Image (tube, rainbow, N blue to C red):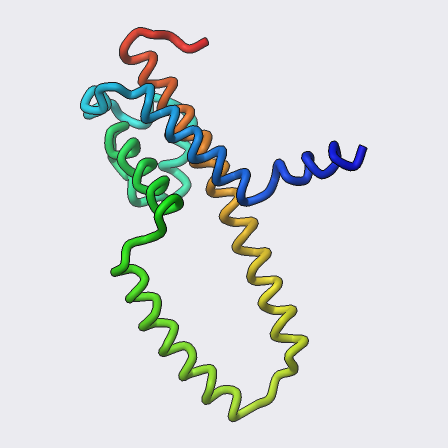
Length: 158
């Protein structure tokens, strides 16, 4: 009985969300044998894709299925291998500036470590929830793209 409830809770873990997304993109990648067929196929033909465009994602604004295919593969690579070094360098530079501001702020006022830990935990939970939601949407979009490709080449979805 304990394993059943644990597996139900694990279903919503970030690790499992990442695995589901990577699996969906791998399936998409294996299904889409000729990615160039996705060029000039508009996103708005599918309700789910149209909803994604209206959610304010400027990366795919007025794009086609091919650009979204490339975006999903790029995100998969970022998850599997980490982000590019340029991004890391930019973050380190920004982090150093934040640390120096934090150091001067600590001199001005003392904040209890319990409040800091609580704040860090809340920030972590906020970002985990957001990341889980984004990964779920991206997984759905990869599956939708796979099904659209099958329709385009006449395989049909089962």
